[in-house]
Every structure is written in structure tokens, then in C-alpha cells.
Length: 326
Ligand SMILES: [Zn+2]
Image (cartoon, rainbow, N blue to C red; front, side, top):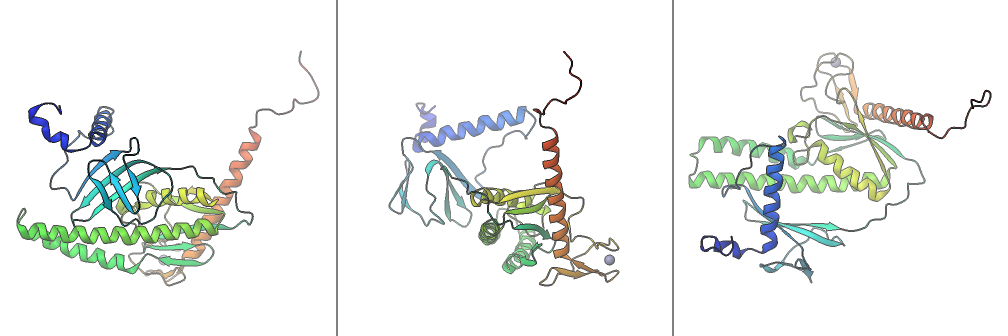
């Protein structure tokens, strides 16, 4: 296609980027025919984020000082969040609606998992509906306050947007403002979660969390950008690096959503700094830390049960003495 007159613009990009796009197209059609996804759609010029991915071949993507060399584009000055040692597999360049450019690098490196911690420190961790991480050892860490403020601001902006005329200059301006807020929320939340998961996995040898159904963004209180599954993924890979074990336990009800005594819904009652909240109906005190301890107990019980079952089903058992059949 590159040779034809009508497609000369294809020559402007690097060839690896085109190949990656073809690969994406192939995958999306395969997903469609396997009934996993909808029919593929074109990328839109009006999308909030523009992006392309390119593969590293014979060192075409590399660091030169604090600049990153990208094929066809050349050297760009970047402000790295953190430098990861390793081999670059591919790079995705994104431009958000605020005009900021981001590049994410997919790196490969060998890591040596640390040996399991000598000292056994167990933790049950829950996230209550008010957006507070509560640990069985007695801590209560709320999500950054600025997140809920920003969320309110976004809600207001979205109401304004609904009133405006679609496609007008003001409409686009408002839309850009929303995206800017979303971007800040993303940055704040990621920063918080990265630091939290690093700290917890370094400190504890076993962390029990709950499995939650669904992976959509709205299902876990506060976790806007990643959702619960994303948080677990973060926790798991950090645990692997820091010699910590993660145990996800299925539980019937998410703790902290209903009163433990009368079962009435919590309906937005905030918890204090120790994770406690008073039921608005029966005035019973609900304890988040106690809920986290219950989760930990259940996790340890499940672990012990699984170990026992593994031992009992070992194939090479000694033959029983007594009668021998020949
Ligand atoms: Zn109650």
C-alpha cells in the first residue's frame, strides 16, 4: 500500500508502528469472530486520547542521556517518573486532550524474587465504601482528599457540558477541562496506590484481600482509575518483588457496606480514624478493623485447609501393610 499514490501518507510513520496497528486489527477481528468483542471501530479524531505504539527493533527506541529516541521522530526530552532497568520491547506514545504527551515503555527484565520474609507478619486488608483502606493491624488510610473534590468538580463540569451545544468552541473547551481533571485524578490516585502497595508488600509477609466480582471502574469505592482488579494486579506484582504472599478470598458481602447487627445499608455514613462507624438505624457500632481481622482469619483458615488437602492427595503413598495381592 505504501507504494501506491493514494497512500503516500503511510510513509510518514515508521514501519514498526504500522505493523503494530495491523497486529491490533488482527486481534480485534479475532476477538470479534470469537464473540468476545464488538465489531472493530476506527479510531476517532475526536477521541480524548490519541496514541500509537511502535516496536523496538535493533535498538530503534533507546535512551540517549535523558532523552528518548523514537523511530522517525528522533530524540525527545522526557521527564521520567522512574527509570526502569531493562530491555525496551515497545513504546506507546499518547497525547491527551490537555496537550500533554506521555510515553509508556514496555520493559523486560529478569527479577530475582526475594526469599520469603523470615518474620511472619499477616495482614487482612479491606477497602470500605467510603474509600478507606483498613488493616487488621489497626490502621485506616483514606484515599487522598483531593480526589473527591476533583470528582465533584467533574460532576459540575459535566452538567455544564450537557447544557452546551455539541461541537461549539465552548463545548470543546469544557470537554478539555474535564479531561484535565480526569488526568489529575489519575495521577493522584496512581501515586497514592503505588506508594501504598509498595509499603504494604515490604512490611508484611502475607496480605489477605477479598475477591470482588466485576472489574469495571465504578464498582470499588474511590478507585476510579484502576478498579479493584487493577489494584489487585498492582499488589500482586509488587508482592512478587518484595517476597510477600497475596491471598484473595471470596466473601459474600463487602465489609462496611451494611450494618453487622441489623443489616441496614450504610448510606454514606463516614468512618472515624479507627475505621468505626455508627449504624443510622440501630445505632450499633461497626468496626472496620474487626472486619479486616475476620477477613484475615478466613484467609488463614482457607490456606490451612488447602494445604491439608494437598497433603492428603499426594500420589506416592506407601503401600498398606497386611494383605498383598499378587
Ligand atoms: Zn444497624
